[in-house]
Image (tube, rainbow, N blue to C red; front, side, top):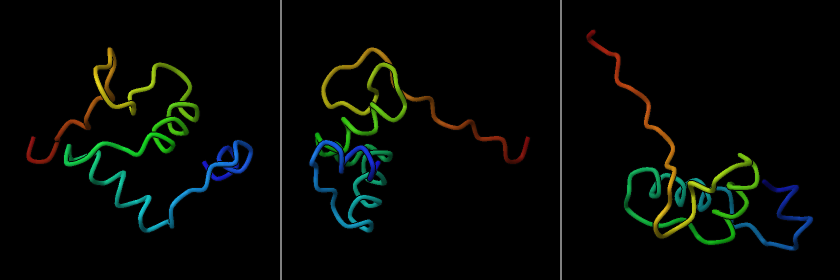
Length: 68
């Protein structure tokens, strides 16, 4: 992510803030900042599941297997 951000001239937030943003997004508490969503979409190459607004594809959540 840092390499792509440097190439595009995007300044990433501090690591703790980036982790916090991703955590909040994973738990449906906040949208990812647009530059971060764009970079993650490029890293995972395909439909951008990290974009805000309606999307056609969302990452699947891990299935809970404990106790089975």
